[in-house]
Length: 321
Image 1 (cartoon, rainbow, N blue to C red):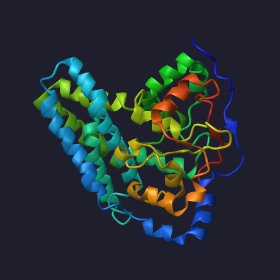
Image 2: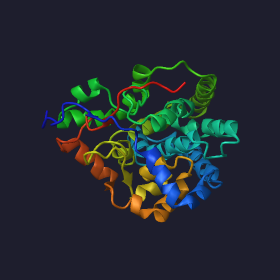
Image 3: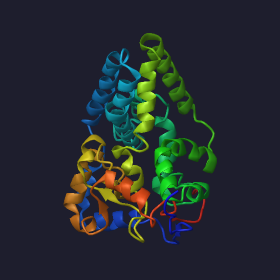
């Protein structure tokens, strides 16, 4: 089974999440960062090009062998679909059309969701914004692993399977830890996705649907682009709960690697997050950071000091009324 992890509990803290206070300090010193707030007018064209690329791939994939389909799903389609999931992350923050046009953001989220194969854009927003506001809360922040996950996947081999099964935990963990009734737009998202999937199967066949959905799932698990799931908040250095990644995969993931910058300034579009770091380097250059998501996955699996327990948690305090 491999080496057992050395931790037997999460890292508990009784301080507030660090980003609100750091945001205040940075803005006091660099008020010009406020000029970066808003939406990215280029974003909708980049995300649309990704969707259209996957639409074009339907014609390429439909007559391929299963071996080629799975290879394309892992190496190409899954990467694009993962980027589209991160496009939905941008949309969750209303960075496609701005806060003044919430419905335009939601509708564009439905469009970006189509190649992913599973309806997620609205549900993701519902939980993700709470992850920002209540980072580390043992109930509200569903990005945190459960005790059951940490206890079951506590060896090198166990962590390997936990990483591979990561999409399942991301899909089902919120439904167990912090279930919420479905919103109207979630149902709309689901119906639109079901209609799209039905059309794809009818005109292109099941192979194409497998290419889309399996690609999405594979690229959320044991895949270089999925390294950000672990790199963002797992405690690789004691006391630090958010980490940035400054490697080349930011180019295809809307700079989600600039994660300290993102949590400090969630109103700044991903394309402009490097500018936040450039303006305020002393707040980011000297804290622990990552340079390789592949190395993050390797270290997570093989290092006994890191595992599902390596997260900073806070006692549940409930939502503000």
